[in-house]
Length: 294
Image 1 (tube, rainbow, N blue to C red):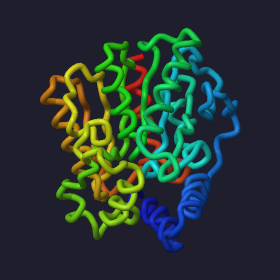
Image 2: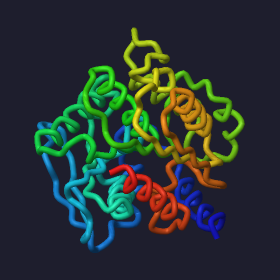
Image 3: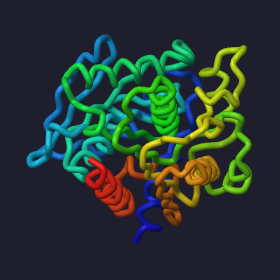
Image 4: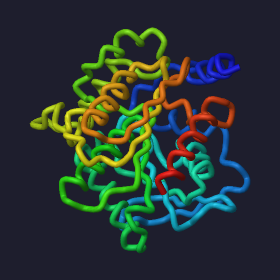
């Protein structure tokens, strides 16, 4: 069943050629990410996070005092509150918490460190509400997984309280693009290819900042003190090695880390959880993980 369902998603993603312009790419990700709307019982509310757009969500029975703060993927150049709304809201349901999706600024109009600055603003907004760090999980997919890791490392380096746990889906952790799976999985990944990643990295990272800088490539950061982490990645994606190597680095730093490699799944597959059983199962696993730590 999972291979039949993922074939349907592959067809959706390859039904049109990848757009060329940034505006067109953003519209396309919003389109494919929002094919299936949020469930009828989800309550949504826009919020101004001290200048950064955000969106609360909660379903009946969830604990509003616990929060999943989520950063969408899109290579730091695309993605939005809309594109990831279904994934975020269902993750909140699985975890039994309120969610806060963060609409951070995008490159190339707003290169590094704009996204990190917005992530820090959103984090501090939660603290202004009186929500302790121990009641917050931070998560993200792809570039959002990168931003999750970079935010946590920035907080740790500043000796600030850290979130209870981290959830990374198909994280892009190495902007040097040195992972072997960029080549070995290129033929089976319908979305992410090395040339495209280089274009995104060029748009996001200003000249003068090395691609191994841990503020843009968290794979090269020291991870001692990182909170418990769940990493989920598909076996059919070019960023497989970004996830595997980050998990290994975290484990070597004595971080409690769980790595799940999902057979046949593609990049950020939980986005399509409405029609993909393995997407729903991955969110259940993530929800169980967050419940345990929150």
